[in-house]
Length: 634
Image (cartoon, rainbow, N blue to C red; front, side, top):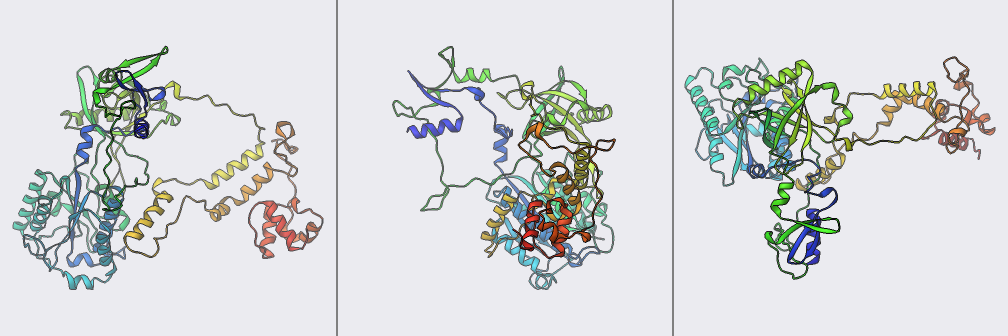
């Protein structure tokens, strides 16, 4: 029992202590009043219940003959692009949210396969959790590069009804035996007018799309650029798709031509935008607006291990109970009290009293004032920022007022300083609402949404007074050479280009096991230094900097007074320059016999090693030893 109590105490970050008349928890140090989670993701109880519902997605893919004709600038056909994106969605769901449901439906096929017997509509994969078998099925479709097997197994037919395809998707949602929270249809096509000249089928499809929107089923269009003309969304799909509330109705992305373009749009839509919380933003007395809080950046880690029963292979359910250390009896909630040591005595609190002590007012954002944007420094970073967007479901009219506030703060280049209480019993924090404009790329795809970044501000106690050790002052020549190195190695950083190698290797091994592959897919670790490219861009500057910083006879342990300095002969304080000697004029064997190789530069030594076909890499000392060994000189 004692071990169980100790584990419970560690889990709750409390110290267990017995007391006459019952048991109590003691808190102390920084954990007083309950410490928030380190990642800062505070999710209210009602939010957790809503997130417990499974997200469902049906990918509706056009299979008419035009989808199997390659585009001008792409070797892949539009159908292959769609299947690759569907495979990526399944892989992503397995990693991030394997409980979600995914289905795949073909329309425009000769073969029909659906419960309602609609013609030219075939359900490839029912609405269910993604697994390895489904991914292998898509791999087989991708392996059919010419499309001959698809034509034999499924065929092509333009005489389909979009109304029937949407009906099939709706039936899949309604007949699912699992509890579904959010329902979406992702439609892949390169035909901008599938019912050209048939107004009856067009009206049926528009009516069905409106009915689906009314019952909460969203339709997202992933349109692909056709080979012969420009995709015109106004011909048919303008009245079919569902435009989210947080996106501009008048801005429609251009059709995708390449896989990367299509995948970016699919990944932006394959997950529901889930807010952390919905809170009021108080702008003044009796003036509030509703906002939703989002976390745009979260650390990714390996999923936790699941404990299984050794006999049944079923997931083990863990039950935690509080046990009294003295009597061994189970403690109820009313039996547990809290205390704090003060003046050598235990000050006892009821649970309700602890809750009142932790209460700093109602949750939400409260405007304190405005400051110039330049006041928010980069080194004020405490934790990743949140993002807020107006929410009409909290308070009607919030969008218009928040839009006006966003426009004004951008014009005046100011930030709003607010008090932020995430939820009841949370400690208050000061934040800066930094305005952000909407940014679209060249294809009219949203890159940055409009809204406010919630930047957490540090308290006075968060600033540290750093003490720097006294070091020798660098020479001007050393500083200039260091600047040259930095300029040579500077590049435009993009976090999307660097994947976590530990995570990628972990999931690559899991993927190989699940898909029954002999070896995992090769992963290139871009976080490792590119030695060849670094040497090409800044090799000469690095060698010169090393020679300037660690000259002949340099003693690292000599301290400030013993540090060797070069004599300055120029007016700028730089070191006296020696005339360079060509590598072809140097008798390396004579230098080696006399022990003078250290007088030569690293470039001269490397040049001789390359000429003499001496394999050696490393520092200058390694090059000297290799050349001496080449001449059999110890």
